Length: 430
Ligand SMILES: NC(=O)c1ccc[n+]([C@@H]2O[C@H](COP(=O)([O-])OP(=O)(O)OC[C@H]3O[C@@H](n4cnc5c(N)ncnc54)[C@H](O)[C@@H]3O)[C@@H](O)[C@H]2O)c1
Image (cartoon, rainbow, N blue to C red):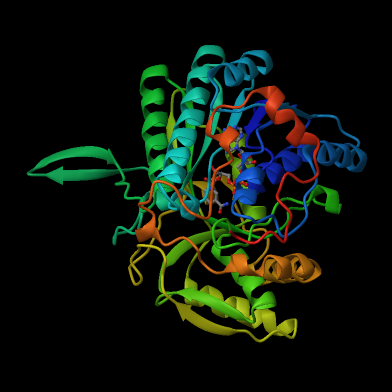
């Protein structure tokens, strides 16, 4: 791996796990960049990480105490700002840049026009800023950009990894595999993909564009102390499906399946997400290459997943029922799904733990934080109907006013020291 490494979005679910993993397993300097948008946006829908998380300063203190290393450097910055990103890249000259600093919830982007606009403006700006700064200051650096398997949608044919050959009226062309996202969030990721590709063509940027499946789990090996925990979102807006099911099993004693539950997706654990990203950093693309990687481990439909969760719930004496509810999303509920994913196995990727083992870890984490989940129980039920998201602004959910504009370092810094940045846990929707 070429260092130093900059991780944009290092306070997040994956970013923090990756930061401590790279910190412990390498001697590189890891530059952690964040503006705490996720903490604040999760609070804006009256939710919170189910597993308590420390402030960035406490996390870094715990890291130093546990591992006796001083190679994690936190830099508060809003990646939407040209100058803040530029200063970081110019000063630290990272040779590997991981870009995770985006609004990452599809339902959040579907709340209303304001949330759609926030998502697309933020995501496209952060990506463009990083691309331009790399091209100016570290043109040979490796950009590891996090996209989403959701960019492809459910095309009804096998999703290839990289380009496909198109044959039209006898003429052949190599084109990017079609993108067909189903939310304003996924569309922002598609714009990113095209922007990375263009930057590769015109600035010769060496980039890995990761199409990642849905991530689940609470841990990586380096979380040896509760102060090193990463966030764990479970509410209907920020939670991903497996994480949500485990909380539903413990708190509701039922699992809520959207519609027929035959929607298939690719999944991987947090352990494997971090391992895959590390592998890709260790094996960068060639100079001037643009590489697309499909990052997933197993494919399940949502009923199969619910059945897996049920079988492990039984070990904890919990016997939830499966209940179908109206699907708030606009998506195909019964479809073909197959994905080519060869690059990571060829680089040496092997699953770290099977899904059953990870589900056990998740049940333990949720049961020990049951009191927090009970307080936020009402957030489990879906509140965002994708067809109703055409309003200018929602009656219930508002993006904090100051987050609608680029934040200065001085505005971000207090959030690095406060343990919580959220509204009281018990606050109900108005
Ligand atoms: N979690 C998943 O299942 C999953 C699946 C596929 C793709 N992804 C992608 O992986 C990336 C990381 O996801 P995650 O689950 O860790 O999300 P996350 O929301 O927990 O982490 C993102 C981090 O980026 C920060 N951030 C957002 N906007 C920023 C800005 N303008 N300036 C600086 N920092 C900013 C947030 O505060 C947060 O700490 C995202 O790009 C997401 O779209 C996630």
